Image 1 (cartoon, rainbow, N blue to C red):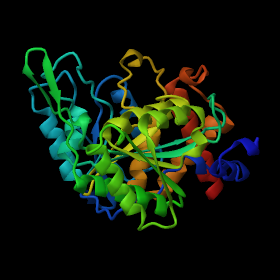
Image 2 (cartoon, rainbow, N blue to C red):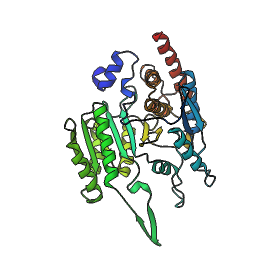
Image 3 (cartoon, rainbow, N blue to C red):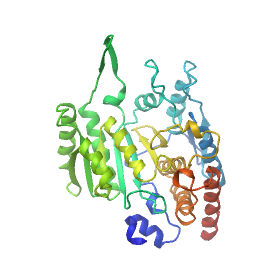
Image 4 (tube, helix red, strand yellow):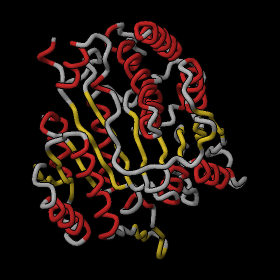
Length: 377
């Protein structure tokens, strides 16, 4: 069995209930959370649509059981609350607290006048880096083994910004704007992240063979910056080839850095390769604020209220948040307990081929927390 696991997963198995494979990596940058009183952090909770509200309740339950020093300030933001200033209230709360955990907010793709609240949050808070860690969980069915890839996506510009208009009926212009400044900072994040976490290679994903100016600038800036990091191997790959390579031999990738739209697509492919949308969390990091959510940003509306949705991605998002807040003990405690639930006890929801409910996963994780804490006494 050990030969089929990632290096970090082998460490986890050898040390019993350790959870190295899914523990949140170190996050580059200096941070000073804005709302910390009496040793407790205040974070904004945005339940969002679909399964978001019940997932936030699971996180509250876990944090309460583990005595995590975090208080939640809940703000309702939903696709159904357009025009009631809910987004402004959410932005104010995040600016006050510095940190948020959120469910996804449904985007009405059939309504051209509806602006994605998810995109607005990222752009107005300047959450320029979206970071996912997709890693094989040995008991989760998947086509490939030994996947351990970090995806770093520029989060604020490019086609995904939604800058488009209809010049005359039947003719639409979608505008892609990229800037050297923002390419440099996402490139710096990628190289610093790789350095801090001992990663060996960075792959820049682009379409510079066609987008010669926009993606050409992206590729040039990152290639030039790679000269400052001689200990990290640098390569580039056209996005269509990268997609094919990712589904055929994902083990070749270590850290991938890419523009906004490509990052959205590649991230979803990678999440699918390790088991689906219920497993992977996503960090949105800026120079002042951070928002934590699931990696694929699905609302899961069809599963809402049924206790069927896999809570793993949301639990991992909360662990990412704790790592960001420097609550390392609680981050590792919950991560280790969750790993034990998924790998040793095989408590899997239906999306992973199991028959367990979301509550089963949460309750088993809490039981493992209690056992770990007892063993430490």
